[in-house]
Length: 297
Image (cartoon, rainbow, N blue to C red):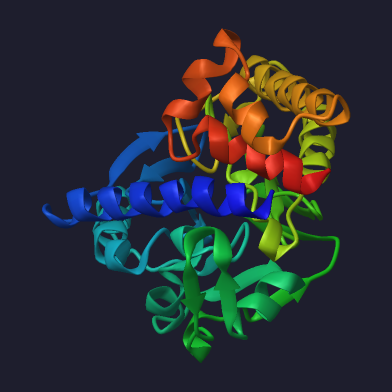
């Protein structure tokens, strides 16, 4: 199983390198999409960023890769007509496509908030075997200043933000941010819209826990909720229901095949069927997703 996981995940590294090469040919740019009230979706290269702008100032959720910080700063200046400096940065988890801009904003006075495990991982050397990466501790300016265990509440721009930790999911330090007044939710990487997710087993993630978390989040939203995934387009409750169905169905397939005595290699050759074929066209292909499931059982 470990040999197969290494083969499948080597493909992820190649895909990531290809994306990096393609992106480096053009200057970083960020698109801006209004959401509800004072909220905006900003999209660059990495994880989706949500900005709240209003009388209390600017707050952002996640901050993409470091090289995109200038583009995000320009976008925030354009939206607000001000210096565009966030008062708060909330990290949904520790991965660099969501925290790469921390140092940029921290050096400019932003207060960074994250779940305690995010601080622990960012402040120590981390090895991401899935992507063949070794990451040294982040600089002090990039580290969360405010950390929490299960949850924290923040009142900002006439809204109440409920920030909740969902453990043993994508990693061990994932948070989901609920804008209760605007009925908008940023799910971080507990949601890859219409795609198989990356579950970082080496950082305390687990497909079974991930699925339980998505089911729990589904009970906290309604048909009018605007759902922002960690990656992909804006979604709604029906999209999240479909995502949960994929998680449950594909996990059941792999588990049943393993119980029948099939190897992970044989399950990969057999595949998950036409219903889920399109879900493997993104960063995580079908083989990698099968390996994540098998590694979580």
